[in-house]
Length: 124
Image 1 (cartoon, rainbow, N blue to C red):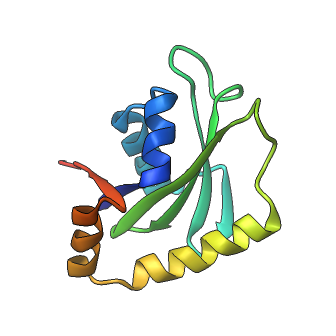
Image 2 (image 1 turned 90 degrees about the vertical axis):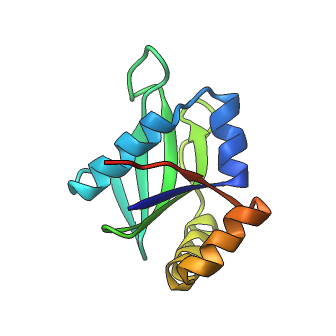
């Protein structure tokens, strides 16, 4: 499983002090079939706890996920900042997931090289 963060999400995670380990845990939960919401088209919503706090007041992250292949952290928000995403945002994420799942590993490596995505090391 390769795990990536979009540039936007990486800035969000840095600002909110969300560790890569928390992101890997979220992907592991998805792989185990544990998720908060399946938005369709390979897009999932997962809750993340704030540092030293619980999930209920934490973050919501949107992940483009394909079992055993790739995960892309695309968007995140604090539950205190907004309740949910719009239908248009959901539709846009589904379109993006389709594109991301269709690109080759070489194209993806190029996106990492240009800074569009950051890969999270995922040794098991």
